[in-house]
Amino acid sequence: MNSEENQNNVRLKAKLDEVKKKHSSLRNENELLKLELNDTLIALERYKLIADFAHDWEMWYGPDGTVEYVSPSFQSVTGYASEELIARPVILDQIIYPEDLEDYRKFVSDSLNFICIRQSLSFRILTRTKQVRWCEIKCKAVYDKRGKYLGQRVSINDITRLMQALGEIKNLSDGKQYEVMAKQKYMRDLESKDRELVSYLMAISQKNETLQYTRKQIQLLMNSLSKQDKDQLSQVVSRINSALIATETWDNFKMHFEKIHQGFFERLSNDYPALSPKDKKLCAFLRLQLTTKEIAVLMNITLQSAEISRVRLRKKLELTRDVNLVDFIMKV
Image 1 (cartoon, helix red, strand yellow):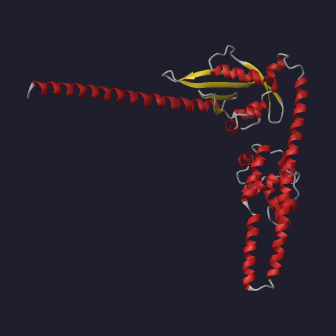
Image 2 (cartoon, helix red, strand yellow):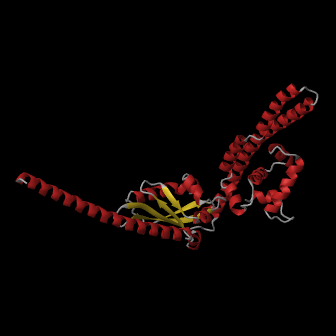
Image 3 (tube, helix red, strand yellow):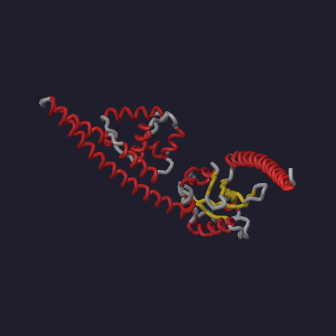
């Protein structure tokens, strides 16, 4: 073996040793990352467990400023489900008192950009039932063990009683007045939107009545026709039946209904899991205070069947005789 080959072997061995060292280093780093990831997952699980049962309303803003977590206590403070805020962050703009919204936005923005001077901010919100409450927000930047920025932990607690005790809400006179006005406007808007929905349903109801009448006349006429004519008319009847039970009509109505009565179907499912899709549809129609006849036409059933459906619904809701079904549904 000549000297050149020896040199090549030496260089090759040196590179091989270097690769082995890098491989060993990467393997050690990978094991370290696995341990850190496991620790992080455990920490996140513990944090979520604590946050899920915290009295305060907890949130987590990601590094890009999006809301990634909202604790269940959000509902006890605001009346809205945490899932609603995750799906529609604009809800925050709707519930924060208009005069405090700009200060809230600036405080969160400054915290996300690490230029916030204030440690906390007091602001007001309007709950789902349009009650005025005082809250206090605090933000804290969070990093992992390697110094990577994970986002902002946000804690918001209800300080309404404290503000009352400090005399910041003088007999709540201004708040009460605003609360009454807000409730009145909320009810007017709700009634207006409900009327629009009812008008939409009445148009469907009239269409269904026309289709049902046409179907009945065709079925009477078929008795005196030939088999070929009967087969042709049977196809027409089949199309009418399809139009009467079209699911897209219900899906469209449900989408608009949920925009007005947010969380209605979710609350029904959570409180009464035994309710069928047909029961929930009946509840929605009752929430709009439709008559039994109107409901029968919309659901393509007889008036007697509609009455029976109401009775069965009462049993599933476990209502006593002294409880009015419509009044109960209105409070869901």
